[in-house]
Length: 325
Length: 271
Image (cartoon, rainbow over all chains, first blue to last red; front, side):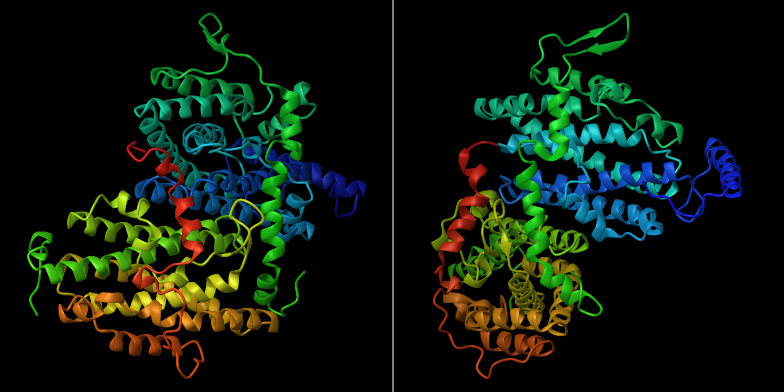
């Protein structure tokens, strides 16, 4: 844990006072800025959340990237290029926000990249998964981005100003991405039997990852969850399960109306409790995936590792005194 | 010079028509293959800001290729997607230098890509593109001249980007300078093919579709000299594969099989 400054009784009292003022500010809906005083718990929760979000955007480019050079028409080539470029842009935007937060700890982007490569910094579960056909590119655009819109909209009023503003822009662009994905899906759904099969197989493949996307319902499932802290500090509003329900509410009717199915025979809407009942994904598998033991974790990290090592000479050439590691 | 305003008019003179089609394939295929090589870099660029910039340039370039393929479609040569995805290597008219692999490995596995090659290649490509387009804005084929004007609105930013990279790398570490110099030496023999106009060079000039090769070479040298010291004779046509004549390397086969993999899985499907 990062602790700085003295820990005298006077300091402690001062901090308690600051903390009270801070909580009053966020409860009144005020935004906290990078140079404002903030509790360490708040800063650390933000660092964890935003650096993971940023690095997930960057790692998230890799599964889709597999299909960028292969996109099957000029229109699709242009669409997916624009889409993945946006994701990279989001990654950059978010890392800038994270960089300001880690600055007081004497850290910078280099540390974030190192943390990714040495496994300290996790990236989102969906980006550890394989993309086997072009239909996976459609599912990623439609449902993974669809899920991302739901979880990010949940933080559109986040108490931390720089993150909240970045999310405004990101969410606007994600809407285009979901439309891009939906357009690929529609073409496949209305296409040949082979195309429809390809689509159904991709959906089957992604279903449990999509349920996992929102995280476990409570900390008891996987042993840890940051949702209590992020809710307390008004970074997010709804719980993981509420978000998952919103996703199912929005997308299941669309999935069924396209004549597609999901690999869960028990799934149904419980009218009495006003919620979807569904088969839980394997949360042990989830833990395994996010600790970089998913089907493509190593392979994707390897790509970043090669890019990092292989371009070292370029970073050295760009450095002011031409001496970086 | 007679101005030709429509595809229908262009088709009336077979010599004009054939020269125009030849030129459009060169322009389309250059942008298409360069954009493909750029797209393989995605996620692997030296830093995140460059990843964003490169993918933006790559996307614009694919947009330009699409414009030219659609001009060919308007001339009833074939559907734009078909022209982009189905034509064999021998039918392609891009300069063969532009098809070179980015380096060792593939974009999916062990991509030991060479940033120096990319900087040198993109710089040569963008300067060539500028020189050609600046004469095409006066082309006798109005639909093409209109596109040249449009492309020239964003292309200077692409060129500025690569000019800056070249300058930065040449002004930095010895290692960077050596890597760039090595790639420049490898590129010189390809210069005649890059700026060249292929088998219909004479007709292209005669019909005022684009300026002649001599003029293009002169203008290109002026552009290159701003950033590089050049060898005394740049245009010795000893390049083994003259792409403008349909001569290509195995690297193009790799590119074509990747970029048309999904398309070829069902050519009749709507994707």
